[in-house]
Length: 117
Image (tube, rainbow, N blue to C red; front, side):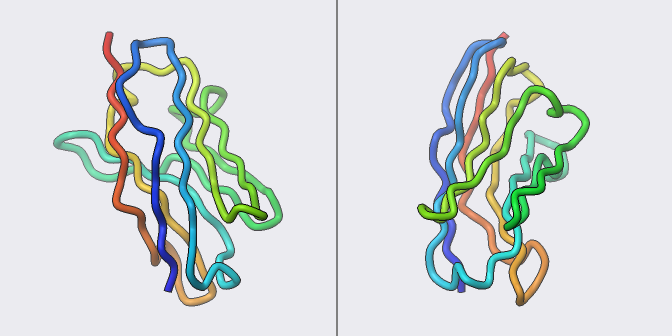
């Protein structure tokens, strides 16, 4: 079992920045990759970014160049630095893991990000 706890959401004006954190605990040795999804009101959950154990990163098109995912293996924490935020980035952001036991098999509780215009 892996437990994920997110933090760092909030309200920010367009053009501003936020940094989300996701701390993992439990069977962390089984984690292969971590990342973020988001879900806006009335929309399906969409993938945002992934970082693998070796540090390889991938981003969804709408956030590429504005968001940066990073990982502190010593703290078992993944971060999402979000710059140049837009109102369309407003969503609940969820942290997830891919582990030896499955793909996207553990999720955090979500943290709200609201970007005002």
